[in-house]
Length: 326
Image (tube, rainbow, N blue to C red; front, side, top):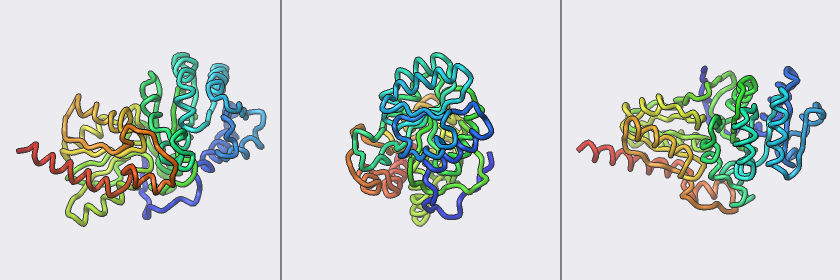
């Protein structure tokens, strides 16, 4: 793992879907086993260039996501490396049984890509905003579950999983992302990335909440509070060592995720702490409800997926830490 943090956390000019398609094209050029499957979202995911270059390795199955996973399983068991994409809600809720049985149970080699997680589905509304996908996928034996944070991380992760046999669920923003890392950074699946050092509390974040945690750290610094930030991009297997170390060294944890507050990152972190080193924990996530139509900024503010809520939760958890010490 070699990390180069971005000097400025700005919106990346390259959409994550374009990085996904371009990386897959590059990988397919070197490895004829790679095939792409899609659930009627070739345009939405920017995969038409892949289909144009490799029509014989492209399968648009239409609005039939469960069947897509069945096809991917068959291709996998004949030696292909299938990357199967659809919106996160359909990749997990609709195709859950096929992923569990045709995929994981059969020990297949499928890379399931679920796009537009949580509030990033924005104007597609509550029906398309996946707030339960991490919980579904981490409950399936043998699944590796990840959420690449930006374009740099996505490209590196795709290169890695191509050569790692097994079932993967990768949730990613389809369009814009905030740059967290510079080109040349490499990552280790299953290991958290320390984005900021601090001693008063630790914020463990994933996805778009990483950028919000960085903003919160600057606000808290002006208040005399230093926070450690861990980018927990692998939800399963989660980095137990980093969680326990941070709990021992900072004494308080805040989790922040674009997911239901239940069964995702916050739950996974709490399980580790409860079994190993209990400390006060505050969780930020969707408050066990469905989403609604709106811009990402509007939904961030409505549901507390923003830096100000992280600041509030950090201050709260530090007070709890002090109270517990008494």
